Length: 423
Image (cartoon, rainbow, N blue to C red; front, side, top):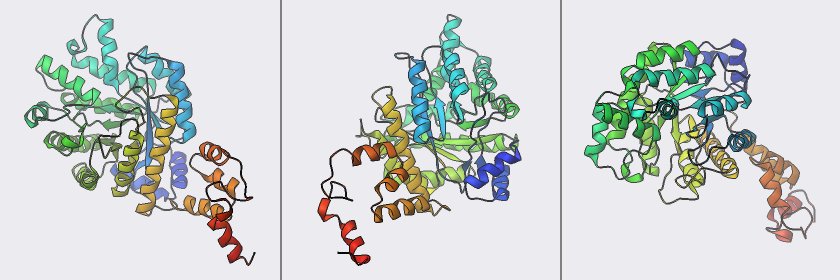
């Protein structure tokens, strides 16, 4: 399906501990994708997302109308990459969105995703119009512009149509539509009394994606924004439409992933993952969190990681991080770092539970260092060595070879002496 250089496939197969033949087969069937635009302006580390592979993590950065500082966003990108994110999404909605995107593409060593609909408001302002006055061709032009710039994957809210839009109103959701792209799409449809242009002109969208070898991320514009709305009719109706769009994308030779919720209680995660995998023919699944409670304001990187670990275990392929600032404001650089680390822990925990090849080797190595009281070795193997070292060195040691948690009563020190015959 995807035109990927064989050397890249070999590199991915090696890093994933999987055979080249399996990678090639799953790419052909669409259950694995490699987001890599052929017009990418910078050589990047390729990644694969999908069936049987390690769970990947995405980090969102980007400006807002209230704060548009490209230097700040580039610092977030740098910190996210250092923290181990697999991809970056530029969700900028403020400032010179086009130039911000180009600069991020220029410096990022990992695949970049965007949401083209965010830029149409800027197009409209240049024409002294509201975005609802734009024509379908303006939507398609926005997509074309992002792909021409070299974006590797784009979120497109194609799954919203007149039927499932009406379902939101009939269902009487508690939190309505929380997706920015979804709400913008509905606003345009209501104003113009027409079908979603990205749904109506989906074939044109596919042609553009194929021409650039880019990946479509089918956005869940009707995802639930609260536990109350989880797994409701609008969400499922949109998923059914997305399932049809997955088939059409594959028939057109286009790589596609499917985005998912959102806010889901723990006991509904398995059903949501299995439903998506069935309806969308095992397309790679990309979820926001999911957040398993609505009360975590300020700590939503934790509520997200709890859901992400379980989602990964049940077969989700790609986790979109959530930061402590979720629902509250634009994330800081430190928020970004914490969000990436939390999602990476969740992804790794899911991979271990699934028994993915090589996943637990990292844990066994750090446990071996811990058993030997090899503090330097343990810190070096930690998912966040910088923070681990800071905590270890935060207070002076009184008992040699231990940390300040147990001191002279260190169980590991005593068992080491006992097991090796030392007093």
